[in-house]
Amino acid sequence: MADDAIDLDEHRGMMAQRATDIRRRRSGYEAVQATLRQQQEQLEEFLLAAPSATWPEVAEKAAYLLTQFAASTEARDPRRQQLISNVLDDFRRLSGELSDPDNPSD
Image 1: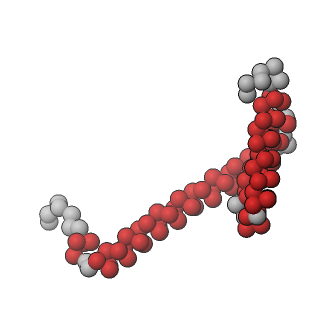
Image 2: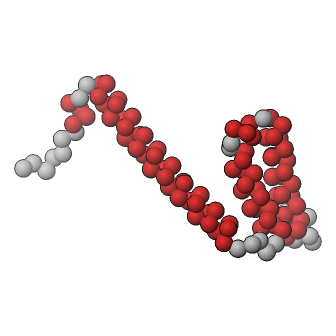
């Protein structure tokens, strides 16, 4: 037997090659989505594991929830998007102030 692999895609028509390429890309996309879902579940388990000990930790949890809400259909209203953006900015600004009040450069 020869050790050279035969590229079967070369022997298919353009439509069949395109269909195969679409299946491969969709499969890759689905694998990435599954990994992201698993990572999201792990993050949420971590966030649920213990109550927050500081205000910055609370802000991080709330920011995560707002980011999840921002991706939903209910949050597509431009006013809600602006409000979410403003609150996330406030969290970042105030968390920096709370974590080191002597350093205004945060």
